[in-house]
Length: 361
Image (cartoon, rainbow, N blue to C red; front, side):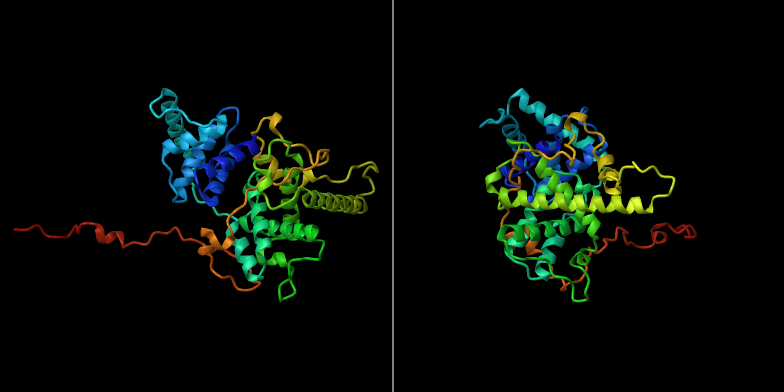
């Protein structure tokens, strides 16, 4: 249900000619809402339409409500025409969206600030003088990651690091040539530029790849438009499963070595569900019905993986995010300057009337 609703938002946003930044903001609004509310109590398509309408205003790319209602109706019902503007159905849809907008704002606690992973990704690729393919493939991975809840679990810089890592591994698998992200001049690993750790990057990457594995045939939106091919992506997922198996075996051997003498010999090694990141993921999606839960990672689909569901983005040099990008120093940690919310103003005592002022004669 989550993936299908995100696909609905992506297609509707493209029909409305919204930039990817606005579509991504709408998807994050959707994730934030259903992290607090249940799919059983709210119509997810009405909520998604409201998120798209609100995100268009937040990102300063506003669209008229009648256009949003018409385009989302056509996408939802797979029709060529929307309801007539003078019809009762059209009026009821508008009223539902306006009422849902108030509920959405209350659920979000009126916190409409969203930081995306595109900016730190492009700054890093520019700092290492990376290729256009590296930036575009990592961009696609970020778009696909929006259909999971990793955007709620980790900071945008960590998601950007995982996307860059997946893009580098994909290029290495697809081209058959050695390719790796360069380390810093100080001898540190490349992910120190994002202030991330290897464990965090591995967890984010595994969640993204599990999304590809659990994607059923017929659910992908415009798969042929992606830059990634299924064969290379399947090889990348196989490598990831092998790495996770080795890591789990290592954790099991370490646990057995460090176990007390009274521990039973048949104790099972720790599983991925006991990790802190998995606990966060379970707390985020606990409000979803059991029927919509994603398959377990231990039971991968036997069908060939579908191509990534991202849509091709414009070249990074033509995107508004890139135009406003500031060149980052080479191999320096990418940080976001804190925005002060303190409002400076004059002394309040100056605005008070003088109690000692004498009355005019």
